[in-house]
Length: 551
Image (tube, rainbow, N blue to C red; front, side):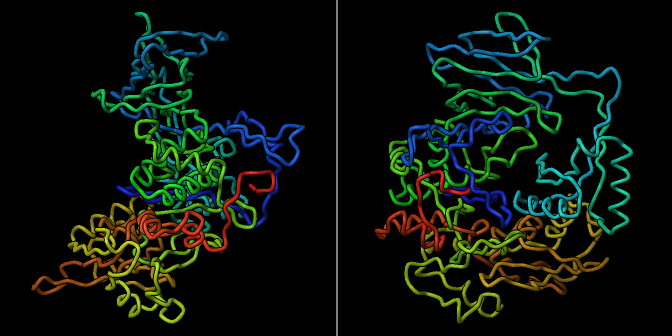
């Protein structure tokens, strides 16, 4: 997963955690499933050890919360000479409309006969899916049934079909608050209107909650803006369906290898060296197959932005990236015959991070600190970056690394206490923290670093007490840092007292796994894609998907 993609992207919504027990499922026994709608590679009865591949079909949420804004519109268009086919249910009948014209989906607010109550017990709010998923695992261990949601930020909810009455929700809330779970809250909304989707075909207006869209050529252009050039072309079919937040999601049903054509150009670029493109294609394929249940609550698998992998359909396809995808067809990255947590980021700042440097949960043996350089610049075994002096010395180095020529390899950002205070208060309000009521910051201090130099604990002393930010919370709480690889410098700007802080650091993103910038440099040095992947994920192997790989 990646978040905060920029020109070369960064994966920040990493993949779903696995428990230690791995389930070995022969791929020939995995068939198309109505709930997850995917088919993994299959064997025919006569194929024996030779695999006959069957294309994986993915469900990608390309417009996740359509209808939240009363004026929201979506235009769907067929390609030239083709027609749109719209299929929906009216009562007990299925109705099908066919048109060669564009169809405009519009939001209509429908007034309810009487107000409706929509509420959920929120057990926590988080920056990334990884943190939410690990927290959900801990709640389940305590006997609380939960689900992971993403109304805006990632959240863990008490499972709605279990805690399905006001009494059950309030009993749960009281029990948790009595047990010192102070960040738990009950979110209640009184609805007087709900969005409905409406469209016109052949002069007649229709409005249904579920809509299937297909074309003869399996190509559909989707436009969310007013200008034609803002439209994006997608392969496969589409479904417009309700989600868990009272709005709708437009889901693209697309074959895996076609999906990669809309990912690789936007993740690594179309001019990257061949080996770097191939490494990116292998990682993107591995990532999506490991994360098929990320949006289970909304009945699709992955999103199309930086919370997953950037996917913009066929607009950006290029011969270079197509060749990289074709050359690696079916290849995934594995560790002990299991799909790896295929995390990557734009840049590491000179050293990669362990999984637990950023998120809670078990470390992955193949995700560990690696100095991001083709030559020996820094010995982590002798100069551990958990030591503040070592870290500040390391962050002054800017030559000889794979990313040295990149603008954000090293950075400095000065921020006033006023701006820091506003950002922190907003962050704490979202988390439902009692510290959100603080008025002034007296001091900030980095308390603990990991061996890769990432901040594990940052203490903030305020007028109402001291609280601690942990790991990836640090980037959510402040606007300034582009990563958690930084140190703080108090500033007074020639005035008495504290004016603010300088954030001095390196890298962009979480820094776990492959650096897209670094991989391109290694490819220019002549490294092959297996060598690049082995560098960033020690002990891993590239394999063709088969019945031996554990999911």
